[in-house]
Length: 155
Image (cartoon, rainbow, N blue to C red; front, side, top):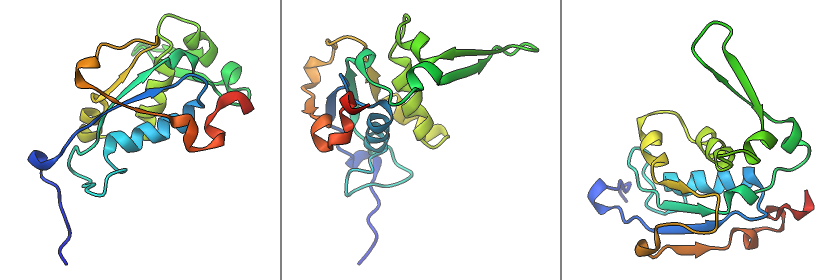
């Protein structure tokens, strides 16, 4: 029995649509990261982009458990001396780009490197209920139904 190694030309990419309304951010990010990498497929090959394209809608309605909504801080540096900045998850979710909370969670669950950056380009996150990818006929995935803990009402 030989080990199977996927070729780039053999990879079949699907389009997956996920509704993030009322879903816990960390659990959803872990599922999205595995799907983008292709680890949910039996033909997974670590050095090939064999993951699917993922569309997430209603990212602004995703839920953080515990006190993370108020206490979690996102840091970045401007590049100037003393240029460390911080913003809470609440400020980001109530701000202009609420989808960045989920985007950062997925990005930080992927391994660093050129392949991960290429796989992250297959992720599209929208804060509203509409998306411009109807022509790709994405398959809707009910993420809440996978596990009772995925629903943020318990938080």
